[in-house]
Image (cartoon, rainbow, N blue to C red; front, top):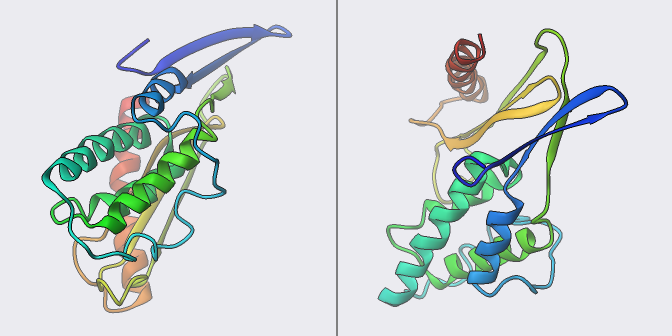
Length: 199
């Protein structure tokens, strides 16, 4: 156990397999917030209509709950649940001025997590390292809200995801090619750090 992350090793057919997960922590988190028996949904955020569906404000108590829950979701998305990094990042952008739509979006992410809380990641021990790096961007994908593009980065080492993120670009790109270049620059910086750590 390391900061809520469970690291495991098992030997199967003479091959050592290494794995990690946060299933126990996620389960406790869902139980604490009453989502352990939530009806599963197919996606954490199929689009952002729910997030912006209700612009009514929240009470101070609801605001505190939102900050607490989103902080925990960000931790899970950073450590082991890359599959909800985009959605959590979108919700976190509303933290300064959350709405009832923010609560709806959080409830959907929690319901999705309740249906997939026990996910584990495994890879075999191999000689040498094989990296697969993926990066992409959208060009002002949400123009009705913001003109900045979004960068998505995903790194796989020997078949195991080791780094991911979904972030807004620092400034508005004037073309789709410019958005791709900004994304590539961010991915190269991430890659250089990961390779330095893994040496």
